[in-house]
Length: 582
Image (cartoon, rainbow, N blue to C red; front, side, top):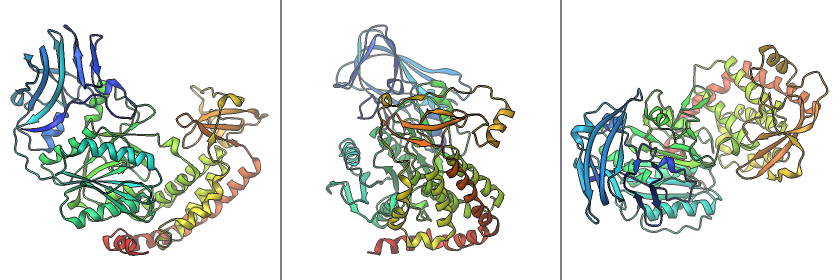
């Protein structure tokens, strides 16, 4: 018998939302120190949750599974129901059985005929206590022989987040090994060479130059390929937190996978709102769009939406992305960060899927946005666009205006200057990136732009400001008027300050006619104040015209240079040469 999926209860150091694990009445409690669920007589507990439902349809579609068992251990008499739910949100009772659990004895129930013949999207377990009961362990398992031998390399790139990487690696190591010591290894690529981690069985630490996430992950990937023992790789951020069971489920799924090019995109869950799904994967249409963004993982119906394969996943972000090594034909361009995960998925032959229960907690991307990140994001977007034929000069011009003016109208004039600098650096061609692969000179150049938007600790009570009043049903003419007057209007401006959550840019209707904006990150309690400047605004408008000229008359030539060099700069030979350089 082989375990496919263990049932889990809250355990990690990350924020906990109990409805992601189980749903229960007031007769149920969970003893975390014992990892036991207690339910009084006539109490009910359901596992139609993000972490504990079984993604039936995907197991049937992508694996060789023909046998399915449910194993349970504990104490007491209970009624077990196995309930399926389809894409139309209709539930079906697939199997029901009454059992009595005896302490120390695991019971196994064969549900193959009842469940595997169902057309439902997911299946879950519902338990009704007929006496006081204890639930010690539960899992879905199979008697099928594993057709694939899996050896997984977990690559974590680290740079100056010593506390976070030690916490993540130690938790992964303690919960994965020795159970999965034959099937997994952790490889930490230490770009700052200060993690403090020591090598031991199943843990390798590689000191590396600071080549960003791109160079760090690529270093780990090539190490796995050169070893010849590994079949798959997971890229993970050093500050990403996950249930370790998620990695076990990836290994178990891949053992039975019938499709050799399956890659698994871990879902990103907001750390500050631990039921809020940022994405289960991404689409790329010249710009990126997260799939299933904003869905509530506590809601049962939203879980069905997540499990449905409505849209193709174009890329899996590198905060948690598992893929087969034998399908890697090309590597990422040396972006340093941003854009590398998108390009890597697009240029390799992966069939990317997602599975409920496999995801990571991470801070909100918009709250991590800084002038330097905006610079890195825009130049990466330009490089990606330079390899695509279908985007016209007019489309690229519109993209530039939208990104640039969003910062100007948000009073983020330093960020606007860095958007211009990103275009200038992109225009220098791919050899510029090769010469500046470690980014030392570039960071020195752009650091001076960060001063006015540098975040510092902020005590909100020390400032006088207005909270924004949302404009509902804004008339089209008023919206056009705001645009024509650059969101300033014709009347005397409001001299007070307006509050804005940290984001990619301000809400323009919220800041209309204000002179100052207090940007604040609730998660870190830091922020900065941005002030409107007519002089800076006019200078920013005039600074756009050289970029207009370049896009219309020189972009095609620049694009050809990138296409000419892209083959080599995404090759293994290129990266091996980079790693050899002192």
